[in-house]
Image (tube, rainbow, N blue to C red; front, side, top):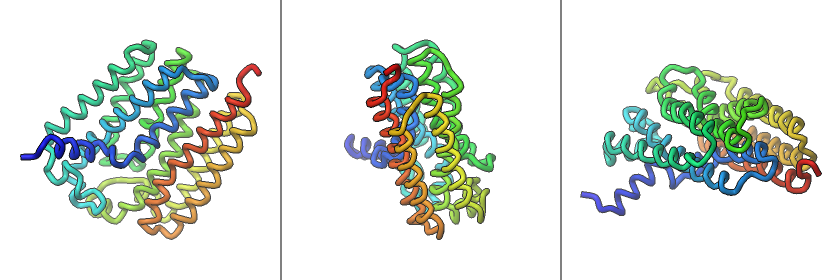
Length: 292
């Protein structure tokens, strides 16, 4: 019989709160959307809702992911000790936890525009269905990019009550970024994934995996450069993109030999790439506000 503190520790691991990289990779594009939609001055209340909602939905997504992969995780070196794989947390218990987290995130957005509430439905579907796409999609990472980028149109809905083309270009940029960083992640597990039959972009790209990752980085940054032009951003934002490009080039040096530990290091390092874009964007709006 586990104690309450031990149970909470299991839930923390199940929600990956001890490994916040997933929250950060979901948070950065959401913040991009909030700052562009809010023209550099998004409502602090709305930002708070989105930040907390990001933590809740990422946590729910991790629980659903482990539920979907519970039969596979025990065969993968990196995931064999996850609570659902070891049986420390039951399947029904996990589903109740995921539902509670999703419900809490839904309650959070109730004060926002009705369009945000309607958009939360496909957002929930994307988060819940992504783990199962690894059974049949050749590049499930692209689906992940849509799911992780859906905070962008929701941010525009909350702050502008509309979904302009720039919002969807930002989502597309996030799709390419997600394919890049999650392919690095998949390169770590490729030997195990090949054995158990899970599909990933690292397997699909094969010997062109490194080239595909770098192409996706360049495409994502190119799209974000276009976003900067449309949003009227200046040299500070472009400097942020240049820093992000430098980080992407550094990732090439980490993944080119396909060493599993270095590929995982590159994946984790994407936090700095997303952060560089946001810092450049926020500082550009601060020193070059719209209408100034």
